[in-house]
Length: 356
Ligand code: NAD
Image (cartoon, rainbow, N blue to C red; front, side, top):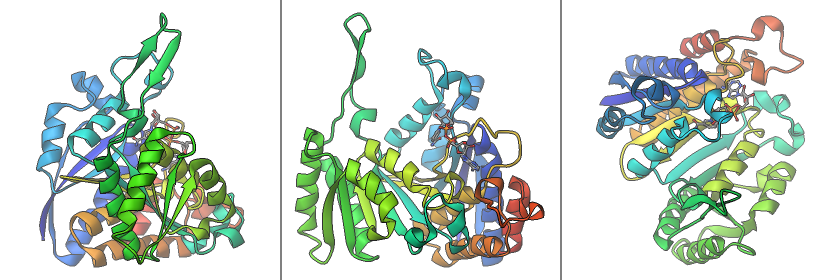
């Protein structure tokens, strides 16, 4: 198979982990006889420094032309501590999602058995947890009208959803549920928010098309509690942009670390695959970032954008073998990990490559 992949490392550890993601794609191509060509492009702080624009037109065009995008992260401390900055790295990310029509963010939360003790949740509660989150990505409070009034002393962000936006993500989630345990939990705050009442109404209507799927509706506050209390009760979870943003970071603890979680953003055009973590300024340049989320993002890319399931499994199995052999990056090490088994970013990448 011939495919063109755009590598967009972005900022901070995005640069470090995406380099590993590209290497594993190369190895897969060599092993399975595919021809992958690559290009790179700027986004975020590095793009602002080079062009003044967090998503340069050239990057956007390259994204539209590619068969898939392997993405790193955006963000820089300079902006985090300066709320008045008009041009910000995250603007690049939000505009990319809007321009590429990436309305569904898929976040599989699956714990590798070897990491049971790396989580802050008790192993007996965690064992068997396997959740697929669908986070809506192009609507909600992130994209509504925002501003200040009363001489700047009052701020507002408007949350907005259309029937169409809820329907298309709900349908994607129901379709995924049909290929899994046929259980779907829709998360909202319908007791308080009008957008949530529309959300629930639309999900209930779409549910009629999937009578085999067992549907439950949960409030977001209850879901936050249930994810920790009983993660195994969930199969597919579908929710709005803001709730999904928060709940999936919480759920990352089920997988042991932010450094283990991959995501796929899909929609009308090119799919974008990225770790769920950010640019992690605290560890940037130290060579300790966990690259496995980028490796697992590459697996999602192969599976979802190219339909290469066996190749994706080869990557997941390689990660499994490396963990079984006892190798860990610092973030997933526990009291049983010997110091010689604690690897840096590149050494962990090498172990994965050796096991493909
Ligand atoms: P973060 O995800 O970057 O880091 C949170 C914590 O997890 C940090 O302690 C970090 O060291 C650790 N961590 C994250 N990824 C890791 C990895 N691969 N290996 C080991 N440890 C890892 O979130 P943050 O600190 O809240 O934000 C830092 C910057 O990233 C901010 O500028 C923020 O805006 C940006 N951000 C970007 C994205 C994105 O690009 N999609 C997502 C979240 C945050």
